[in-house]
Length: 166
Image (cartoon, rainbow, N blue to C red; front, side, top):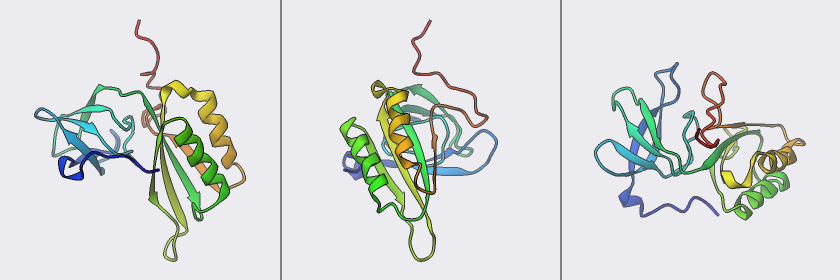
């Protein structure tokens, strides 16, 4: 299963700043709403702090700065693998994501030119961090690293958006 997107003709490409410390941007597929507002419709590979389904407000097209208007409640994860994604460990993770009614995208699979792969995951927050981390621990036998994409900001501070408001 891959990301179940709406009609691609209804989506637009939006350049978002990867982090507050850089001028680099990532093109993210979004569903346009009212002027400057979008719903993210793919799992961002490099932008910090945003996940699939989040509603964003683009503050500047030039810089790619944005703010989160509403969180959809999905935890985004990036998995960097030295080697191919065609292995039982990755298959188990993908099965776990789909069982949890999450989504995945294969952003890049190793080939003759590059031995690196990138797998993007999106879990509903209802699954909980312990279950996510248990599933991700199944990758220990691979030459792989993973990180949360929208749990911490670029400086490592927890965003805490999943906690109840006080």
